[in-house]
Image (cartoon, rainbow, N blue to C red; front, side, top):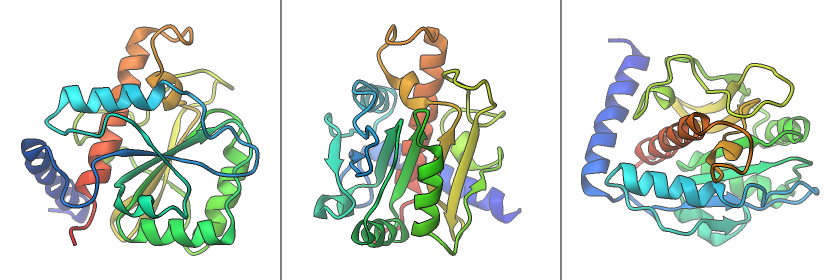
Amino acid sequence: MSGGRRLFVGLALGAVALLGTGAPASGRLAVGRLQYDGGGDWYANPSSLPNLIEAINTRSALRVEPVEVRVRATDAALSDLPFLHMTGHGTVKWSAAERKALRAWLEAGGFLHADDNYGMDESFRAEIKLLFPDRPLVEVPRSHPIYHLVYEFPKGLPKIHEHDGKPPKGYGIFIGDRLAVYYSYESDLGNGWENVGTYSDPPELHEQALRMGVNLFTYAVTSRPTP
């Protein structure tokens, strides 16, 4: 059995155990939203995370806290969170202290999902390179468990909202075998998580976005090292 296949099986078994208990191995079972400086609208898509949380709570035995936790990278509350989401249309800027804290959290088992809401790509790539100058941002292969752990996405990241018409790409930073940062580009999952009717995207894309979000959160929790 290959190393990738062993990782997939291990994560799948972990997911089964987790879904059966409804509790994480450690910390809070909550979804965080990252606040940042630079002028980007980190607060975009206000109905997105409430809908994602509802999807996790109604489609599994996981019981996620009903309200998103808004944190900066230097907040003490970050250490207990397994999953952190960030989005926006503009510039992302982290201070040296925020980069240090965010990297430490990621290395300790945290998972960051960055979702380009159209316009933050250039600054996010620059900041993530400062955060991990020693680790490249690479395309996540379609065979990775994040596309198969709960729902199947054999073609990889789904295309939810049209911007430039480019194909969706899922990029990541790995720490060992674990995917610690997942960057969804030209997909706009956050738009898809918002209330149906907010945009002109059809309901079936809302469903696809929620399914991908459930995969992301499940992976974040099941891949987190136990203390």
